[in-house]
Image 1 (cartoon, rainbow, N blue to C red):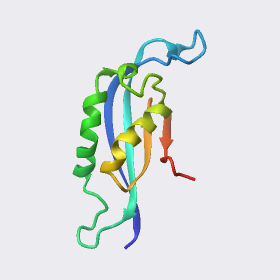
Image 2: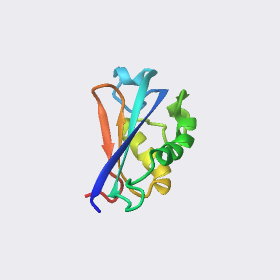
Image 3: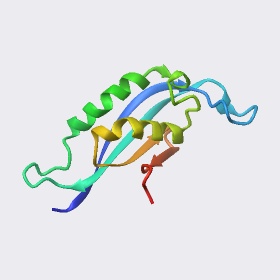
Length: 124
């Protein structure tokens, strides 16, 4: 069976500020984003199912994180005291990887034009 890449996009709204940027930087002020997160999985298509993973299984794995992140102040969440897109991508990976063993990449879209992709701690 061929290997495929499967992507499920999820969304959440949240506020944050970046405490470690230079004085006067606009991101030091409290502001919010409509985040879009891509959960990308890679692997073989199942011979019987014809898919890698059921999209509803990905949505179920995301649901607990959505409840923690959506409409919250990210800086108050343990591990997100400096919630850059990079830190957020790694934070999500650490919490969802066990539920999605074929997880390959997480991409956090902070705006329409800015995103960060994380490939896990063992990526080349």
